[in-house]
Image 1: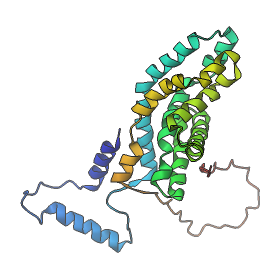
Image 2: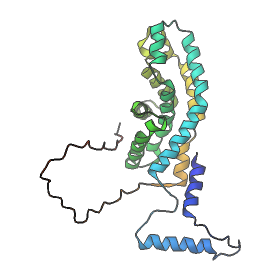
Image 3: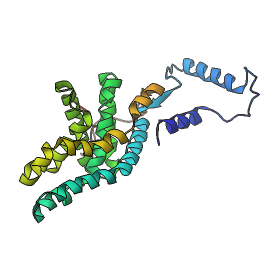
Image 4: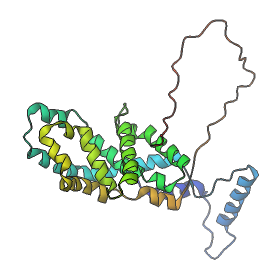
Length: 265
């Protein structure tokens, strides 16, 4: 589901169901409703713009789009990788350590997400970009059905490499940095027969082509259409609850994990 579908969903939520007014009626029900909503926002101090999109929902739509992109482009990328490995003299244990010990499809999804997520720092102020990256880190593992942080850790690693590479050597394309670090993550630099693949610029470009051409400019299009905002947590009313320490100590309850935050690389 792309940016257009998010826009449609947002309009559907904000437009009440009314009888259709004549097209030439400038003071129709839609205009009256819009003015009433503006007054309500002003009355209750809500300065959220009409084109605002909640950050958590926006990240959810983004990850669904990236999942679709990864599923569409992974087969070609995987064939290129396996064809390159077929030319290497790999033993059974070496091939197993490269292909079977890693969830390569999930790694590829992380690469797709990281390549687009790295653009957040060029579109949003640092604090907003960090919050959006943090929200991506919170949702990205569950997006592919993982219970660990394999994908989110790799996303943050790749985003950091893209950011550092862009500052040190602007001649290096982001997709090439992603592919090079992805091959290192798979262990290509640790096996003698695959070290040459790390230095093969032509192969890296072939592996980077599906990512570079297949990933849409999602956040740029989103930024042009929507203003991002964060849903404030609901306040809990405790009433007249006695907050004095209990006489009998309750068993320890596991604390809720703090939200993950992106750090400045």
